[in-house]
Image 1 (cartoon, rainbow, N blue to C red):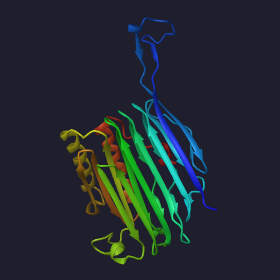
Image 2 (image 1 turned 120 degrees about the vertical axis):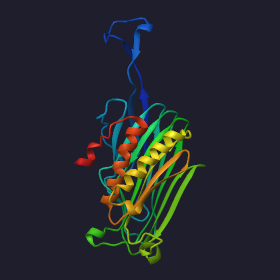
Image 3 (image 1 turned 180 degrees about the vertical axis):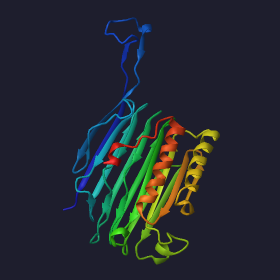
Image 4 (image 1 turned 90 degrees about the vertical axis):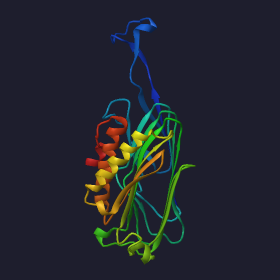
Amino acid sequence: MPWHARLQLDYTARRSAVPADGSSAALPALATARTPARTVAHFRHDGPLRILQSLYPEGESICHNVMVHPPSGLVGGDVLDIDVRVGAGAHGLVTTPGATRFYRSEGELALQTTRLTLAEGARLEWLPLEAIAYDSCLAENRLNVTLAPGAEMMGWDITALGLPGADKPFLQGRFQQHIELPGVWLERGRIEGADSHLMDGPHGLAGHRCCASLFFLTGTPLARERRAELLEAAQQTAQEHAQARTAGATSPDAQVVVLRVLSPMVEPAVDLLRTVWSRWRQLAWQLPADAPRIWST
């Protein structure tokens, strides 16, 4: 029986006034100071999707969460529906403990739909591990982003076609990807395993089996200097990486900076994306390049 799982994750920023000297005594309003906002996560779910305990390795203003799908994969007919909302001034980071797997289908579509909605001044880091398209899958992975003025997010999308290291190639089936910031940026691709020109041709994937993108999206157009700085950092990092020949960064709109890479396997692409993500974090938000703990376990 197909699974239809839903998850709604909400981040809110909570502030509390405290006396400037840290005491609990009542003081006039002018003598109080506000603590930095604490980002708090709440979630509701239906079916096998969960959020693990909120973590604060960088302090209370940034809430880290790990999203878990216990079945670990989708077959034909399965649907995952993910809705993440970030309130004004909140900052959430979401990752996963493992890959999302789209398994062989007998004819029905497996669908994952993710909606990310950010209020004014919100920040989100959307960093799931790769999606693996197994041989003969029929799958679609959709990501839609809505950003209010002043909102900013970093996210990535990593697709692995088959398991080349395990000698399990992607020979049949279809995988479709859709990434959209409505009215600003749309990327849509359809990969057919039997399309040899696409899979192996010099104007297609040229034999690579991982395609990945890292993107910085904003609700307000970036200032020219800031946009150029982010783009230059991505381009320079890509040029110095082992995947330099199959990587490139562009800024198709003043609200979008995107890095794309092809690689024979997942690991080289992920290494490049993580490196650029850490540089963007420092440049755009003046935050340290601390990786989520789950990545090192």
